[in-house]
Length: 170
Image (tube, rainbow, N blue to C red; front, side, top):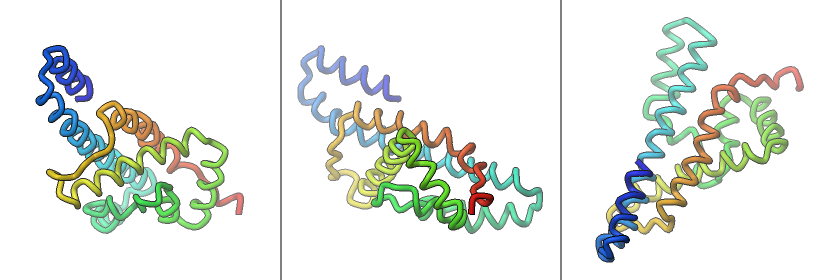
């Protein structure tokens, strides 16, 4: 999607279509932001489902988690405005939260990935809850794509992060 959007902007610039270019320069970053946030939501929810499936085969537990922790609950999993994952880690218990906080301190790249992921989610919420049409996203297409690439690293790592066990260290 990014490459397609970038190509359209480049074409309009080359053709000196200034007004079309300006319009799309404000619209396309918003479209990419929504697409990225939507993709991340789907992947985070699937990572949670898969993690639970790895822990139990009890269909009642799987359904309970689906209904009360995943379905229509994604945006409550994170404190988007805080730009850290502490609230999310705490959902797995105090030991896991403190373990993940220490783990993130030792891995600055992971912390940056989490911040990018949370910034995308925060911006998405701001945009959809504050009149999408008139919302001014102060990010370029390239900046949104950069956040996506960085946030994608966290989303890709989440399944392995969920397997970390900090219980023994308490």
